[in-house]
Amino acid sequence: MAWVTGSPPPPGWYPDPSGQPGTRWWDGVTWTPSLLPYAPPPVGLDVAPEQRPIRPTQATLPARAAWLGLAGVLVGFVLGGVLQVVGAVFFPGSTAADILLSEIGLWTGLGGTCVVASRRYGTGSLVRDFGWRLRAIDLAWGPLAALACLFTAGFIGAAFQGTRFSGSNTDIITSQRGNTLGVAVVTVIAAMGAPVFEELFFRGFLRVSLASRLGVGAVWAQAVLFGFAHYQFGLGLGNVSVVTATAGIGVVLGYTAHLARRLGPGMIAHGMFNLFVTLTIIGVIR
Image (cartoon, rainbow, N blue to C red; front, top):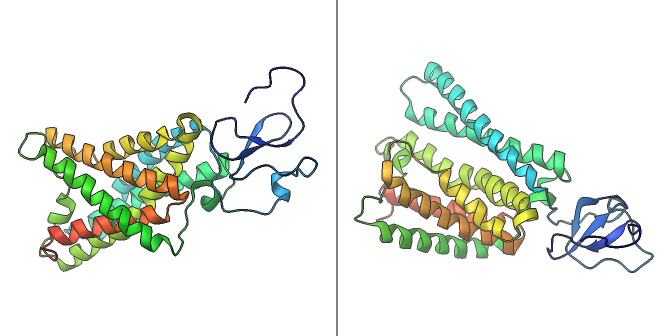
């Protein structure tokens, strides 16, 4: 919102200048990160955000906050590599330990980025800034979103089937066949760890940050980045189907978070999707 004539208005709640539903606090000089999803209070009752009851709503981070994601991913990969070296010393020959430590390093980078972004640009709460919470109703919405993910991945996979662009990024699972501990590790990673940290980073941090500039287009932007994050070196042209299918899943999960205004349904859907794929590959589901 631009003030065309006269002096800036006094501090108060005004329609969000980015065009999003809700109202944003104007402190008399600049717009703040405080965003409310409801209409402003009656004239004369405006109070500063810190004086109002805290409501579980998502704040809007500036688009420049998304650049922190690049540093977070880099830190995650470096830390994952360091932990792999440590694992090679203490657990020589254990591919399960190698995979787990690598993922822990990556998750530390992703999760740490969200914490830093929240404290620097938001309210300091992952719940209010990124909608990182669960509700009972998510137990119903999550499975529906998981079915949508399965349909999307299946449709895209079928479109590339039989072409040189068809590939798979499930080597992390197939490599553990016959290894009970390895199967347990990759199952926990796929069904629990990845859904928590990937949803927080992509559907939470990135989507919310980019929304201040792209609006609902942030759902598609984070999905594209989610797809490229699953690029596999050595897979060649097979990455076309992998990246496209993963991006499609990212769109489903992105709209799930956008409509629910929280990450709970997407975390459940992501976990169920990964669990189904893992159990299918290792032969539990036929």
